[in-house]
Image 1 (tube, rainbow, N blue to C red):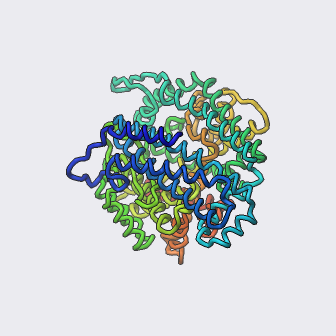
Image 2: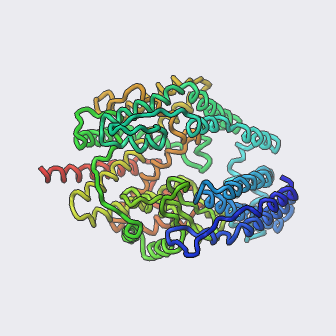
Length: 618
């Protein structure tokens, strides 16, 4: 975008109303003034970014001119990214506070335009660095020691040389990439907006529109007939669009296969893993171990059947809690419990976390038009992490609090230990930080539980978390590997074929043939419902992360010498090294069977405790 035109747009929109703040600060609302005091300040910073982009453009074809010029250009690129992340974070978080504010929606769109400008301007960097070659880059780093903070970032570019095209080829890929998002866009439009959701009359006579939110709410109903009714209506509607979702997903699979071929990778999976230099053995070992340990998953389902009082488990019986409770966990108590739980990580960690909870980093409670769900944004390097929550005083909210603060402390420690360019970390390690906090919380809650009923609540929650995060995500990983492999080989896939593949895997994991959980044909359309499949080979990292976290938490809680420090070093390292190597150096090899076997052993120990409580009650 032309700089002058963009400046004019900024001036035109600068008069948009800024979000009004109450005179008295709310201790449970985040303070976006830590980012920008006013929208005028945001506007000024956006103009400053545009000016920096002009300067960065002048680095094109000049990186190898001298060691000093090389460092100046790399520094400028880092400053551009750091400023953009701050602008983007403010815009998105202001919007998420209240999605109905027009000015916030405008600002979010302007941030998207800025992001496009950043992508366009920085596109020359990787091809030019590759053109320089490793020997020239190493020589420049030797002459300019201050540029060595970029060594890992540069190594990550240089190692992809055999998979990178010339400048024209890369420009062509970039052009096509901007125009090949139709598959995901089609999915989002149909699944989130245009789907004609069915209406269902519940057992109390209430009629509901069974959209995705309602499905998640009512699939846990204690009324079994109602659960079946919800499943039949919801999946029946997805089944009506099986052909359409098949077309959209197949287009995504073809795009991934084509990109892998153009970049000279043997298949889509290898290319996706190479983004973070992950060994193929990590993915294959995860799936193999999940499937080797299906008897443990089946044990869980049989336990669930007994506790729910059903003689034959059906797929609509997997979501209602085995234990119900009216215990409340207000945010003040939840925060205190979390702080007590993380003490094994050391006084410095606990002190920093406590300070964060008191410093308006969180937006805690649900409100009309506030974004749903929960997330942590740690992208603003020189400020602090921000957390969005929707706390409703139940145990799940407490667990979510610990989870998101695990992410926040990861960002906090990384930004204080690494330069900006090395602070950001990949999903592969991100979810280790969050799930380790959850496991420390579980251990603490079991220690402070006042009776067996309370212990059962925590054990039930932990079991379901292990099922959903390990076995379910591994099942998704098996499905992704299969369908991508078929398209990589040039096979076609229809919606009906995808349903058949997914149904076979779904039934195998749930023991349908053995009579563990019966899966109706209608429910095998579930693959069409999973949005993560449009982000290739992503979900497996939830399963690897909880497996690593389980080992780390066990070592930390057992007082193994140096275990806390080894774990915290992963968080401090941010993205300064490749994630698999960091985790392995800390003592967990995710390409081996050990972490997955340890997680399965934990799941069995939890079921042992539940059965022991049940035996005491007889």
